[in-house]
Amino acid sequence: MAFLMESKLEQARRHVMTGQGIVTAQRRRVAALRARGEDCREAERLLLQFEGTQAIFEADLAALQPKD
Image 1 (cartoon, rainbow, N blue to C red):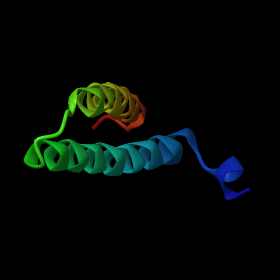
Image 2 (tube, helix red, strand yellow):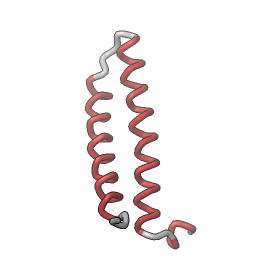
Image 3 (cartoon, rainbow, N blue to C red):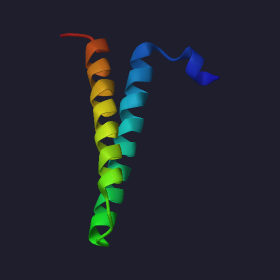
């Protein structure tokens, strides 16, 4: 329910922070698969999708932040 009261800027910040964690975790998964010599192509494709989404989140945040 608290999310209903957050501003667009707060929401954008939350998306960026959450997305960073997801990207970091997926990078670790890819590295672990590689280290074990396992097929990591699907994990890499998913990482690319997460990184693309993260770029959108970061662009949204940049657009919402006050300009000096």
